[in-house]
Each structure stands twice: as C-alpha cells, then as structure tokens.
Image (cartoon, rainbow, N blue to C red):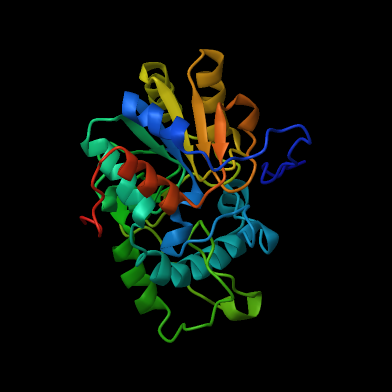
Length: 299
C-alpha cells in the first residue's frame, strides 16, 4: 500500500503562544553564527503562496509525489502542464524585503549559513551566498535516465513549441510552481523527453515522498553543529526534512528562534516564536542592528 507523505499536522494545545518581541532575534543575530532555515512563508511577500498558512495551497490541492510522477505517464502530463503554466509566473518572482534582510545579515558576517526549503532561488537573487537548497531549485531540470541537468528556460522553450496555443486560465499558483488546472484544461498537453537520451525529465527538486540526498542532509547537519543558534523563517516545520535540524539544535543546547505567523511543529524546541510578517520583522531587526538592507534585489 502506497503511503501519502505528511503534509499537515495538528498543533498541540499546550504550545507556547507567539509573541511580537523581536529582541531575542536581534540578540542572536548580534552575537553572530546564526544558521537560517527558511520556508515558504518567507516567499509569500514575493507573490508565491505557502502550503499551510491561511489560504495555503494544501487547502485546495495535494502536491505531486515522486511515486506518482515516476509511475504514471498521465500524472506526469498533468504535472508538466500545470508546472509549465505556473513557471510563467513563478519564474518572474523577485526577492522581497525578507530575502534582502537575510542577504544583508550575511554580508555583515552574522550568519553561519542559509538552508532553504524553498525551490524559488530568491535567496540567491537577493544576494545571499552559499545557500543550501534542501529541496532543489525549479530553475533546473534533471533527466531520470542519464542524469543530465538543463536550465528550466530551455525546457520552457521546448514545451512552448510542442504546445502552441496552450493558454488556460489557472485558478492559482502553488509553492511548488505549478498552476491549478482541471483535467479538461490539461487536455492533450504534450510532454517532451530528455534531448540527450530520450528519458523522463523531472524538475531538479525533491518531491513529496522523495528523500533529500544524504550528502545534502549531512552538509546541513554540519552547519547546525557549527552554528551558535538556528533561526527559522517562515516554515511550519511540518515535514521532517527541516524539523530534524531544529531537533538537532535543541538536543545540543543551541537556541532555536522562529519567526512564523502560525504555530509550527518545532515550537516546543524554540526559545521564542515571533508571530509577525517576515519582511516587517527582519527589516526591523536589521534597523535595530544598524544594518542597511538593499531596496531592491541584486540579481
């Protein structure tokens, strides 16, 4: 029996409430060696919705799983039709003030690293360096047969040529970059194969039900070991891929601080959870530390 991945959780009644006090976050950043762990909530101000917040995409659709994608040609056609349409919007997203604040903290030497669960590349576009993309990046495409990597823009060009006139109106865009389309709107959308070997193409991201590469996990564990504290930004920590690093930090006595509007699965391990919008919170902290934040993205 195929198991569905964990996509939701129910907060415990005894979780500590959120606060609006940013002083612990400012103190941690002022001390330095802070490891940032970011999630979909950091990108909502760039127009990319999150999964689980108010109006999150999980209320209307179930993300594609690795098992369905690899086993079902119809599922792949549906995915690529939705993803191709969604990429037109997703690929145009630009960093917001939260991303730019994280980049500013990095330039000041206050960060031990940045791990992101997001697949949008907005940390790098804002100027952050050495970002660990825990779940990959939608801007790349990988062949499941030969392993070749190609830019998403190249695949987009090929799909445009193969599906001239494909212009359905989507009900919405999801955090994984696909658009909400009905089966009727997907129609007979044509999926193109790998240009090198003819194999199946997949976005270079970790789907639900797929494991994060072990070497990437170990890299992140090393960053946690070397950091003085962990700052979670905009993640519900529902899935183990991110929660395990919060648990690792807490088990070794490192402070965990969370900025997220809603309760998270990691609240019990946290020194504090600040329930404020990410852009406002991070630019406020930057101001307290006299750190300038760029008014626009650097890339």
